[in-house]
Amino acid sequence: LNLTDQFRQRGVSFEPVVFQDADAGYAAYDEGRCEGFTSDKSQLIARRSTLSEPDAHILLEATMSKEPLGPVTINNDSAWFDTVKWVTYGLIQAEEFGLTSDTIEAAAGNEDPNILRFVGAEGTLGTDMGLPNDFMLRAIKHVGNYGEIFERNLGKDSQFELDRGQNALWTDGGLMYAPPFR
Image (cartoon, rainbow, N blue to C red; front, side, top):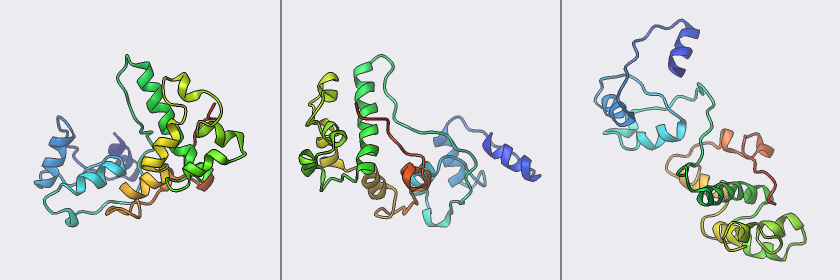
C-alpha cells in the first residue's frame, strides 16, 4: 500500500507482486522475480545480509511512511507485558539520563530522585512488578541503554552503520522518549 501510494503520487506505473509472506517475497526478490521490496529500514538491512549477493543491493534513503515498531508479548500475560514495557522505557530513559553500561552502577549515589527511582535506590517500581527493585540497573549494566544497543546492532558500531534518524531521542531530533519512571 505504501509503495502504491508513492508511485501513484508520482505518476509512475508499476505492477505489484504480492506474496504469501515476507520470506516468499524476499526469496522472489533474490531470484529476480521482482525488482524491489519495501519494509522498515531495519528489516531491509537485516534481510539484505541474507541475500545471495548482499552488496549488489542498495537501500533507498526515502521514507515512505512512519509506522511504530515495538516489542510484543502474549496477550494473556500482563506481568510479562509490564516487564517488557518498563524495560523498553528504561532503555530509552537511561540514554536520556546519560546512563550507560559503564556508568549505571555509580548512579545509585546520585542525588536526583528521578535517577534514584530509576536505579531502584528509591521507590518500589520493580518490586511492585515482582522484579528486583534494581531491575533497570541490572538491565543497563548488561546490555546498555537504547543508544548503546542501537549503535552496537544497527548503527555506527555495526556492519550496517544505520543512522539513528527517528530512533534518536526526542532531545536529538528523534521520536524516542519514555514516560516518567514512577
